[in-house]
Amino acid sequence: MQKALGIDIGGTKILYSVLDKDGNILSEIKKTSTPKTAEEIISVLKSIIKEHYNNIDVIGLSSAGAVNLENTMVLSSTPNLPAGYNSIDFSKLSDKKVFVENDANCAVWAEYKSGSAKGFNTVLMVTIGTGIGGGVVSDGKLFRGSTGNALEVGSLKIFADKRQKCTCGRYDCWESYASGTGLKNCAKTGALEYPEFCTSIYKDKNPEELTTYDITDGVEKNDAFCLRVFEQWQYYMFVGLVGLTDIFNPDCIVISGGMCGFVDIKKLEEKINSESVVTPVKVKLAETKNNAGMIGAGLLALQ
Image 1 (cartoon, rainbow, N blue to C red):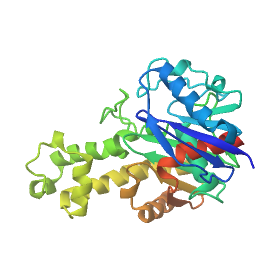
Image 2 (image 1 turned 90 degrees about the vertical axis):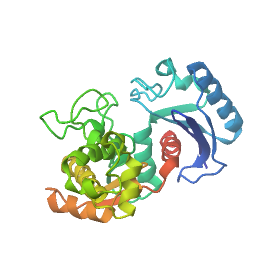
Image 3 (image 1 turned 90 degrees about the horizontal axis):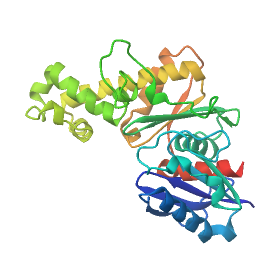
């Protein structure tokens, strides 16, 4: 039985373990802090590979950023990783096969092969955290686009009249409304527009200082203002998802990321299916969670 070493390289930590072809974790999941230089990252990765070398056949790496079509290097800007990271040729880390893929692509592959989307044919995964990422698998293949940059779904434009500036510098990207940052933005706007703010538990707080946690906590306390903000945020999430459903016609949508636990999955599924012009879709929460990148990378390397 072939085994892979799955490694997920994040901005703050590197997560790794040995996996089999079914995504079963065969060794202790370990983590180490992400080094501050590209040279140190290379050194740490070589050390991790050496630790498991005799027990693995291939190495799979999950990373932020667009990956080249040869799956050897990360090409695009990765602001949370050190200078020089984009010049690392990961294939030279070992004499065994080393395969690198974008973290969102790894995550959707993990869910498709061993998570909540197992058994479905066309899977759209949307990761909702500080920003929004996405990936698609159809007929057993990742959809990567012409240069490997496909599925930058957070950059989907949902308004045309420059209502809100996104962190990327453009206006009205989907993630500026429907991500964790988007929930905070909805709260700031809502504090100025919704009469419920006058009786909210946060009525004395500066709207600019409202946080994502304030709103989720307020929802749990049945605060009318927070409930309205949250409803607006879920509507923005729906707007993007129904558009992507009409484009990709998935039979399963997987929602993952730090904000997914707050989403009403059943309500979201009903609303998408009531408005979409394509066949019905199932909406599910991700099962592989924080291990998705690591598992997906290992499984892809074994392909």
